[in-house]
Image (cartoon, rainbow, N blue to C red):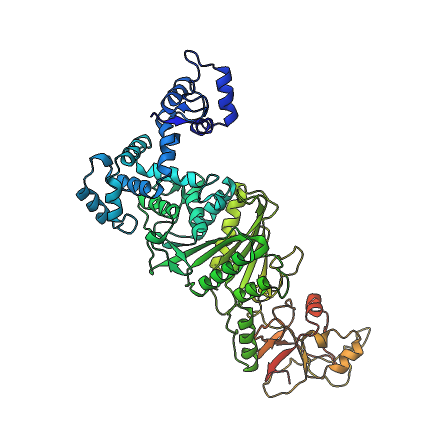
Amino acid sequence: MPDTLTMQQVADLAGVRRAVVSMWRSRYPTTEGGFPAPVDVRSLTFSADAVGEWLTRTGRGNNPDAAVDAALHSSRFATIREHLDAASGLLLLQALTGELLADLDAETALDAILDAQLPALLPPREMLAALDDAALVADVDTLAEAGYGGERVLWRLVAAEHAPGGAFAEHSLTVDAAAMFTSLLRAVATADHHVVLHGQGALALLTQVAADIPADGTSSLGQGTMPLNAGLSVREKGVEVAPGRASAASRLALRAFAARGIETTGTDAGDNLHVIVENRADAHAAITLFEKVRAVSHDLADRDVALVLAPADLLVGTLGEGSNLDEARRECFNISQAQRAVSRHRQEQRAGLAPDYTLPLRYVATLPKGMLRATGRRRLALWALAPNTDDTRPAFTTYGDHANHALDPGECDALAADVAAACSGDRATHAFLRARHRATYNLLDEPSLVVPPGVREPRDGGEVLAQAWVTRAAPARRWRPRSTSSPRGWLPPRRPRPGLTSSARGRVCVGATACRTRSPRRREARSSTSSVLTRCGACARSVRGAWIVSRSSVSCRRCATPNLGMLCSSPSNGRPRSSTSGVDASCRRRHASCDLEVARPTVCA
């Protein structure tokens, strides 16, 4: 029986819409030189060879190789999809040998499998059984000749699984979303990154991204190369999935990558790029997602990166305080353990930063709606996880708002550059696009990860010294003569430069609590002649005109910023000079009850 094409298959072959094929039939009737007549009027199917020859002769459509590609869209292609596992194995074997399978003996086939070190993807016993199926071998040889080799046919089968009704249909991205993820992979990963795909969703995403990328690594979606030189592997629940236990569609995808020479087995050497994709938003899927993210975060090495793509309701939305989903996400964030570590660090008055046990979340982004083909207008969000590059500074998370912006090439490149800069710790020198920075500890403690515009971001806490004014007592106001020629005749006495000692004791005014007294006389009463006004460096701005006294062990109870330094300035009549003007308004408002612990502060004499 000759290969046939349906109306939709003719449209796919020509690269046009189905309505165009109907127009061709009515405009060019089935006369000499017209559109081919159907071979079956009831099912409305056409001869694949006749349609391909007509498209090539008339120049209709957008495929100049329609005559050669006709078999790839015909009923023969649908036949091998019914035997997907065996057919994909034979196609990979044909791509390895470069010979027709009908002329291939068993010994040559086994040597090719062993030389390529692919006994897991091509089990010898199953391949020998598939070679005995003469009809299937004939179909594979015909398609391999039409597709110029088995590799192209394999990727054609992968694309068919992304079509409606295929195994990858629910994970399929739109063209713009695939371009965004391609730019993201190109910016974040390097040639040394081994790609770890967690689940079939991540595998489907990578196959769609890499489907149009030739074997040399160049991509038609943009400049650069795909970071697949170090290979890839598929894991489920932290354990690598053996090809024998994977589904037929997953084995098809792995064989398509193997046909390009990409290693498809796990490795413990080098750096890893973890990819986690979840398109469902039900409770069971959400809890499984958070458990998977937490397990991956515990295994991140210094140069490892993890990308999480899931519904925005789960990643950045408010899940309801006290609900099961909220508890699962907070457990993923590891907030409770981080709070205990900070409290223990404060009680023991240790120097330096408290150990950071929070989720290493470096970048959060809300993405536009409609990125998934199967879920309509559901909005997705992106997490990028990477270890903190500088343990001496608090970890920060960057939030990018891309929800209401089209994913054009410029937007995709900017998003990819932002994620790469946030993961590498290059936050100070990179110009972020619509991004806001928050301390990771504070952001993960909020019910929602969305940072609205206009919110004042705190400064880096651990390395910014606390600002203070310390005044030195002056004697009663005396006047000295200016000169006999001076019209006023008298000047205030010169004040000596304050001396700094470590034994002097003074009254410690705690942060904004002491600084926000409105009455100047009450401020004077509360401040002694050698007082220290300390503030939290994570929530206060710099103040001009102060000297460093010491780096006492000072920690903020609210934002948990430890090891803050102290500054001082000289007094004037026992009244702290500019005792409130330098205090940031946001510090007084947000830290009215801020409580600092000072271990043996050093003050002015």
